[in-house]
Every structure is written in C-alpha cells, then in structure tokens.
Image (cartoon, rainbow, N blue to C red):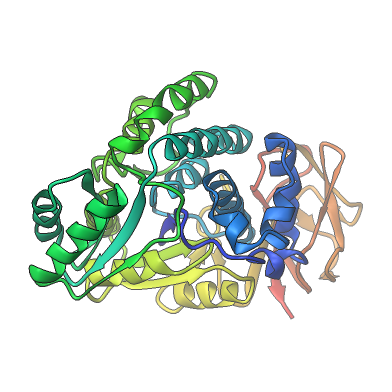
Length: 404
C-alpha cells in the first residue's frame, strides 16, 4: 500500500473545491463547518485568491479539502502504509492515522491558523522558494545575509524555502544565487512560518492542544520536526508546538517514508498526495529517484490511483476479519457512514447474498445506527463484509461490488 502525504498552505486557489461538490465525500465540508463555526464551503467555492492568502482561511480550506480527498480514497478501500504532512498537512496526516479525531483536527487547525495569523501581523515576514541548491548552501546564504532570515523548509536535495524579514530574505536570495542556486520566487503565504517570527503563536496552540485526546497511530506518522516515524500517541503535543518555529524537514521525512515502504516489503514504492496541488509528489521524485508518485486533487484522479495500485499487486480490503479478499481495479467497497450495529436489507441475510443483486448509485444496502448505507457505485454485489448485528466503525467496509 502507498504512503499518504498531505500538503500545507501555499497551494490553495479560488474555487478549488468545485470539482468535489457532487461527490459523497463533500458532506465532510458541512461537518467541518459545524466544528469550526465557519462557512468552509464558501472558502472552497467562492473565496478569492486574496481571501485565501490569509493564513486563517488558507489553513482551514486546505486542511478540509485534504480530508475530503482522504475520505474519497478511503471509500475505495485504500489505506496507507504510513502518513506524513507538510507543515499544516501534518494535522491531516494525524487525522488520517487516527491520532486525533476529525472534529479535534478542525478545531486545532482553526486555532493554529488564527494564532499564526496574529503572529504574522505582529512580526511581518515573507517566504521565498529557492531552487537549484541544497539546504546547507541555502543556510549559508541566510547567515551571509546578516539579518532575520532562516531556512524554513528543507524540501528536497534541490529545493528549500527561506523566511523572515523581507529585506533580509531578499538579500539571502541574492546570496543563494551567487552560491549557485538556479532561481528564487516568493511563496503566496501570509507570514514567515517555521521561524522565530511564529513564537507568538505558541501559547495559543499549547492551550488548544490541552483539550485534544491523542490516540495510538493506526500506522506510522513521520513528523516534520525530526523526520522520524512515530507509532505512539505520546509526544505529539510537543512536536506540533515545536513545528511552529522549527524548519520542516521534508527531505528527511520522504527518505523515512521510503524506508518504511521498503521495510514492509512494498515492491513498488508509491507516494500519494491528497489535497490541492501536486508539489509533494514532485518533491518525492527529487528525493527518491525512481519512486512512483501521484497527486489526488480531483475526483477524476481516483481511477488513476486505483490503476497505480492494481498495476503491481491486487488491492486488499482492510475490514477486520476479512483478510485475503482481493479488490481489483474493477471492484469497490461500500463503507459504513457511521459507527454502530449493521443491519442489512431483507434480501441480504447474515452476510450471505440472498440474490445476485445489481446495485445502482444510491441503492440501499442496510443501516448503521439508523443511518442508511447506500452504494456510491453501480455494480454487481459480490459479497458482504459485515454480518447482521455486527458492530462496525466509521469507514469500515460492509460490502463489495464489481463495477459494471
């Protein structure tokens, strides 16, 4: 199975959610809006680019869209070997791995965005992308600039981001060009993130983290601050606070993700970026030559993801107790929309097919805690993955279909 990676802010754009409005996963936007107390649909559909440049808007919109994409991928029965996220994307990775709940994640991102917005207003700064030079060279350029400028992102062997006070950043960019960098360009964000300029955001984020319950990850999560894989709940509060003022070690994170795929005998290493943009998929290729990577930012990308996985090995469903069932490119799973007891419809008895039924989009398969379980696909029902009276979790597959 692939590694899932989630983007940070900087790739948001006006109307970036429009392609998802007809997909079942769009319902998460309403849930996120309720948790945030804000109209996130507006941010994803009507907000201008200028409005989305504001940190509090960019972070909430990017995070929510990443989770919409994640939900759509999970509906296909695909789960990751490991997760990581770039800056803000680390919060989406933690939700994907089950470390924090969806609503906690939304509330944390709201508070983080507001806190970083306030810090940016107090300490005006900028970020600039440097291409064609490694982190060591760019760090030297920052030191030679003699000002408030720091290495903020170590993205790949040939791409970094520097941040700080505008004139100092400009000087460091010129120094980097003199030292061999190919180009520099500004990053469309509202502050000097991952530098000491963000120190003012720490107390608010620390306070917000006290109200969050952290759980043991369902798969390893590689952290920005140390580039290491973490498999326990403890320590994430410290890492998320440190992330505010520490550089994002994305190159090291990609190397660790690649190592995790190798350790699990993944014959074809695959990185999948979930959310707006495709920058992380590109950076993975720069760091690990020969790696397969792709971005999923629109519904049309979902078939490409299934093809990429099924091209080497069958895709396995991940419902507990049903190991060994193969899900090929023409097959899909239907997942539970909520937690509770599963009750199939009358002709599907105790997990056995009563008829060789053909399901249309919206066909009723049963209920979970009184909520309908309906097929998002048209296909022939091949088998049930949950029995009558079985208690299932949100996102757990309950049936599988062969798409017609």
